Image 1 (cartoon, rainbow, N blue to C red):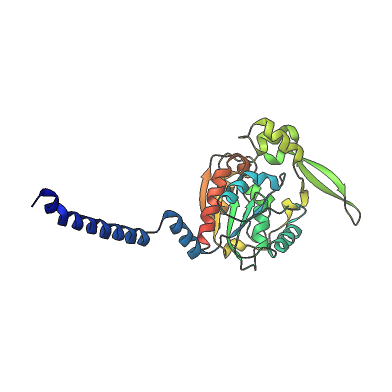
Image 2 (cartoon, helix red, strand yellow):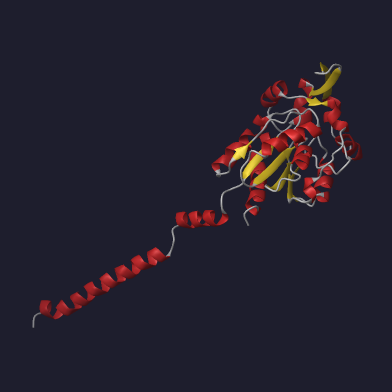
Length: 284
């Protein structure tokens, strides 16, 4: 018997073994899902992501959320950023409440500055609001006013930078709007941003009705809805200790950022991370 004839059985066995091994490998591959399949399965298990509704505060508009909106949309979150009228807590809250009724599915409601007071009122009675996120915000208790909280925790320089401007009321008489003086806007509101940016923000700022500072809160959604809070430690509009007090009282999941009051503009990544942390709990 020559060598070629002697090796023939081994070759047949090797070919059979290779075929079996290939089938086994294919079977194992089918049993182990790819990362993409894992992500799809996880997304299906958790259901659709909640809509994030962003509410701006005084002396700003919805464009102050642009950096946050870009990141949330990149991560697959539906986003809405309605205009806050800034005319008074009761009417502003009623307006936001009507906006929330148009949103389908679960909601993560986010408020910056005075917007915190608005979301605390508007969320009451809406079962779709699953989380409240306060960004350098007021979290008033019932019958509290922003002026009272500011007196309790002095240190903010924004009040001394405000300028009153009267305007006619529809039914007669006059009201008073408050603006941040343009030459003081940077230091009082957004000291960690370039002045070239804050000069534009000062020009496009939206005024707040002066009566808001003495308007009492009537609703406190944070007492029944899980809350998160971002405290800004270099804030000249709402003193950091005031923010910490309100966050602790609300039992909020709290993080601190070395930022001015305009944190959604100067630190959009930090704001986005906290919002998404709150959003993930809505499907757990």
